[in-house]
Image: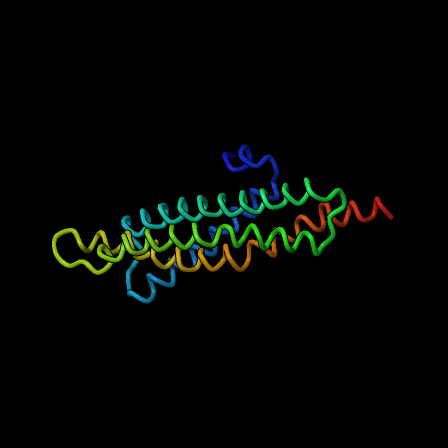
Amino acid sequence: LLLYLTFGTVAETAIVMLSLPFALVGGVWALWLLDFNLSIAVGVGFIALAGVAAETGVVMVLYLDQAWEELRRRSTAPTVGDLVAAIEAGAVNRLRPKLMTVAAIMLGLLPALTAHGTGAEVMRRIAAPMVGGLATSFLLELLVYPPVYLLWRWYGEVRQSAREGA
């Protein structure tokens, strides 16, 4: 509901929500690799992972929207090539902030993931899904979001404006 209120479209909300399954897959892989069972601590890690994945997805979609709006200001009838260039520019602008966010979170969680001693068992189970999920979420947002956004904008607006102009 909050995502829909932010973007105002079901499509952009769905694009952001697309990050959750990808992030959860990475979290499950990390649990499998570390041989952890499901527990309350693992559940807390997945909840935190879902929040971070949704937040970074929102920022990526906002960058793509900015690139699209800039294109629309420059061109009254954008072509598919213009749209691809705008999306590439938006995704490239998002690369450094995304790398910094993922690196900071992963580096911050590595001590918890490798800790031994009092409370380490719980902290490792919270950190594991987040580290694994951020890795797959990072790849999703850089490799899958731009083509999905391209298809949505192309079918929704560029293709429609080309038809109207013909």
